[in-house]
Image 1: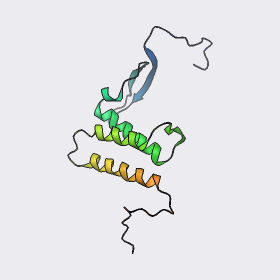
Image 2: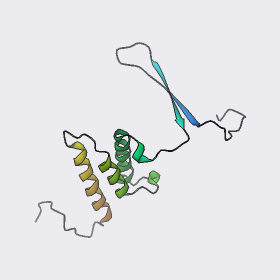
Image 3: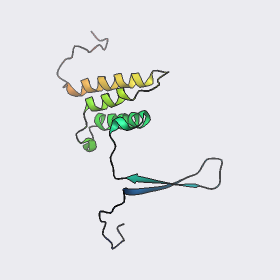
Length: 125
């Protein structure tokens, strides 16, 4: 759009953007186009699938653990609640383990290095 002279206006359309990508399977010679329309209307996280919410929890964890400037108002409680609510089927226990990892990271992020914590059990005495 940076080369267009038209200004964007509020239209009656519910579309905000169209994402166009191409992908090619390893055993194929020709790529396949995939066009996905992004709508303006926001969805409440409770109405999204467990897979989508789980991906958001993992991405949120990454933003918090790296103290990203893009984290906005995101908190450890928000990420943990989203992860807990979207565990779904967890036959291997990996998702439950990740929820525990979020708890541990949240506790560690709130403690200063000089401050001893009761839950420290490093095996060094």
